[in-house]
Image (tube, rainbow, N blue to C red; front, side, top):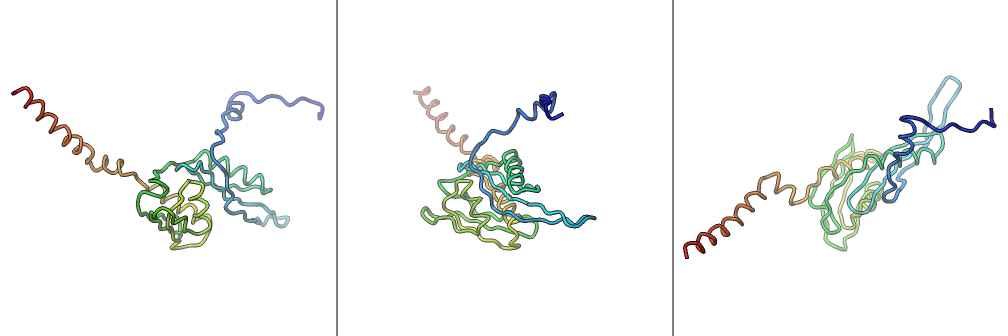
Length: 195
């Protein structure tokens, strides 16, 4: 049996193995915890890893992986984080506006900061900001100190961020601005025709 050559995967399994997400950005392990499951024969030990993946340009993903070995847990979390990355706007080296993100009992408040301020935030949120490419920001944890919930609360805050152009389009101001610019041009053409 051991001398047999491994068969190649066919069908969907082969496609799944080929379609691995592209390696984009750097991976940072935020937290590794040992977990215990009580079963009939005793206790079964495992590991939980919280991992953040970011490209340093406003694209970031976070995930939790669980396995019997630390490396396997980190690999699982990294794969999941790469599949579920989100993109948000960055203005210079900071965020566009003040925002509060909530997840479970954890809340994270963040505010844009002047150039040169640096990242003023707790450990979990700090690693997330660095992975996302934010260099100047003020952040404060307002609730639970659970690292997993804090990181997910920060992600919820990132999802709420909107650029100035996006807000103008949502409010219909972009269309009004275009109409205001076109009105003087139309007047000039009518004057030219009259002359």
